[in-house]
Length: 452
Length: 172
Image 1 (cartoon, chains in turn yellow, cyan):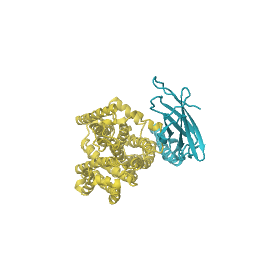
Image 2 (image 1 turned 90 degrees about the vertical axis):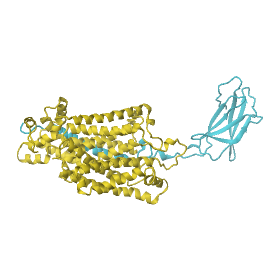
Image 3 (image 1 turned 120 degrees about the vertical axis):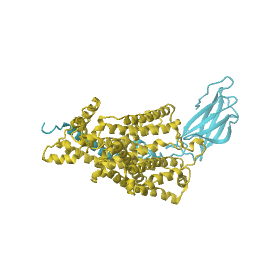
Image 4 (image 1 turned 180 degrees about the vertical axis):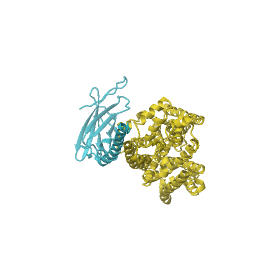
């Protein structure tokens, strides 16, 4: 950082790195306040929709006997997918010693925490009688994939919190020590969360140890969470879901969406928090390449998922494929497959398009495609049951989400962004302290830790 | 032996008594219903309905219309191929309904005339579709094992965090 620190800043922060990565906590811009206000408007809009749903029941939605899982469940699957990004960075890239991805780890963990909270809440929103949620625990049937999902989501929620918290512990100590001019509640928060962190080398060693344990533990749990989510569908006898490919298909799609959301988050954080020095063009280049790789894997599973049934075109399975390929859902299907999958792969092969702005736009396409892909996985299958549909009201045959459903779904995104914004605002979004450097420097002497 | 469930009497209707007796001759099983008025006189030309209780509804048996004769009696053959419970018990129901002169009446008797049906152990066995208490042992062990393993690690990590909080600064 070439900027000369002001006297006050110099007193507070012991290095330019600290100033760069902590100063956003102490000041609040007008832009930030407007952003929060906009998100709150969407939240209120969603709360009105949910109030109506609670008052009148699920009849205010377009869900009926056949399409009993609507955009709430599509959205749930999307959030679960997004939450896998935490394991991609905190486990896969970390254990493979990819140093370049280190500054992005916390962003990924924050997104994972926010996404898994929203996924858990969306499931309750989808319930007609949320007051009976605890019946799921009270009348627990371990044979039900829904119970497996409840268990794994709770577990992953705790692990995601731990991943974020543990890697942030040294920085929390730093916040406690440096940020003395913040409001009292923040000071108290840092003091409690910092857990008496004092850069003791033994603390670092213990932290490294549990970091490694968590990095290994999160991987099977992350795979399990999305595989089990796919089993909610695979164990239900409907066309399009009756597939052994569904687990890896979901997991690969999740990693692709996760990489895309990281690029989007990187772009916003870099642009609005002036962190271009820490989130570089090189990061966008590498993340774009990673996105291409993950998209190719997902494309492979897509081909597996559709080629077999499309080749055979058997019965209702064939009707389902026809509906997707040339029927009512064809425009959405081809936009998602081409615009959200094939095109991004091709575009990101070109270096100029791996720069921040184009990479951001392409990642947005991937994310949009990923959301509508979940819609295509959930809804058309439900509209083609194996038993014939007879003697039902016309409204049972179609599914067009009502404004209440859209309001609640959009508000879930507002909540998702609010949680991320809150966490990014009160904690350093890029790790300030580097553990390896600390351990090394402390092996010889008790040096000035803040200059690491 | 009368087993009567008389309906609430209305002024223009009378109560009737219907008694059931069961006869077994060679291979056939006969249900005989005898209808009498409250003075004990046989009621002739009274239409009675014969049923066997099934899982979800009543199965009509006998002729399409079953009238009592001059002795107040009507006989219906019990089908020989109806399944009963595990001991062959079936519930036989005789109804007097919509008569011009008599109140509605239902008489029920349980007889072991059905074909004994072995209890289907299907739902009581441990299986994926059984009740919660009958979950497959392998599934219970596998899921419990995995949950225990992961949550033990979480517990261990929280324990280490507690230990971290107890470590004081070096040189202080």
